[in-house]
Image (tube, rainbow, N blue to C red; front, side):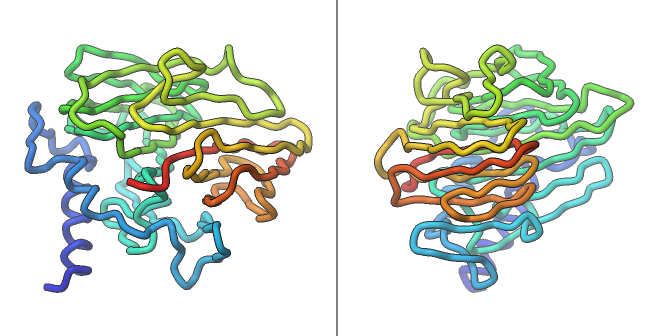
Length: 294
């Protein structure tokens, strides 16, 4: 079996086993041979570069919403910006340390049964509805639209996630980043962004600094959200040299560094110190600044 086919089969089998339906309950203990980190670190490469069907310039990559991977498990509808579970594209594995960007819709009262992770920074941003979370650290919480949740999986965690409502779908973005430290003590946190949000500008919701605004993770990454009720022109300056920014248009339209973007498009940019953003009225945009070297 050649390397490409081996990686493809390993990816589908390995990742799927860690996230697939609550019909099969995962073991309560973390199995190191099925390590989240070790499984995914072997699958990265020069994967911030586009394939032939995508648009490329010297330092940008465009992922149109229609090119994302898709999965429908009945209770779960998922769109994958990067290779995940049964979606495999060798040119869509990661953008620097950003490894997973899933756009999920979960049916009422359904969800992911208990399953393990390790050495991964996991961020959840609900878009509609509420998510019920439980983990083996003793945390039980409802994470709703207007919150940001973070888990540092570190030496290993198990957790479950279910739609907290019985009468409506739940929609969320789930984002995985490789950490800059392995085997840290697992931790959980969530915040409401209602007290820090600023209309018609970008505001920080994640950073590497526990004392900074928003949640924090073990990585030199900064996330900013922007929700715009009027057409707005602004500028983003990168926090750290060598980082890149992956922009995801949650709703509406925008132009970033001269690239026109529509709803659910993703756009990565690197080898740049700052760039201009023109956000249209009614748009909501997530900027994820991350190191480009894993």
